[in-house]
Image 1 (cartoon, rainbow, N blue to C red):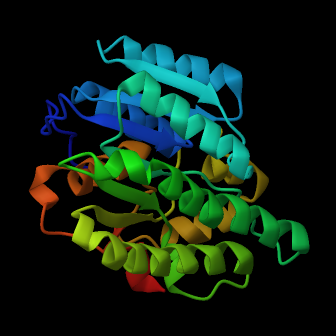
Image 2: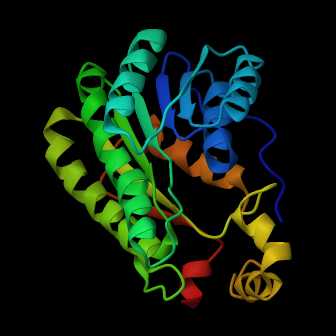
Length: 258
């Protein structure tokens, strides 16, 4: 594995960034990376302890840090949170929709969890953030999708379907907001491992699945949350000013093997 960069390559001083689903794993890494790059950052999630811990870690970088509890399956709660975040930060330049309901099962509960959190939370947060983004000269939206949205999945049909819908929404939203000069992109992570995350748990709960998945990653390892964060910061940065409507796979070549 190549060593990480020795310093933050992006400068987000003056940016106001909202990360919906930003207390753990990929979301935490995204929020911390923006804070380390100089942005003022607001995060939301349901679990208060993780929220407080991540807010403190962001504040330790010297960044303005805001955190609020929010059930992202609840449309009214999203409206309240976006308004609070904008008030705390003084506006919104970047919206990152990172939450997942992890609805893998082909049941009503699985489909509902994915639809409400993976898809509709992104739709609703975007809708409520739009007036603030319209007032920003450097506005962008980044959704967290998955490589599961690019191929069929017998193990997680609901998850794959809603991520495919999110990819499609990214393109349609990008087209509709292009005249407003608001860029919209997505990242599609492969299998990412972090403490108490999905693949960390499967290492002991489903070791055969863990080994089989690892064997299908050409780079020979699971990804790290920070590697997804780096891609998100790129897509939100001026270096990506001519990029919109794209879903960027960040997966160590995992999608290449099917």
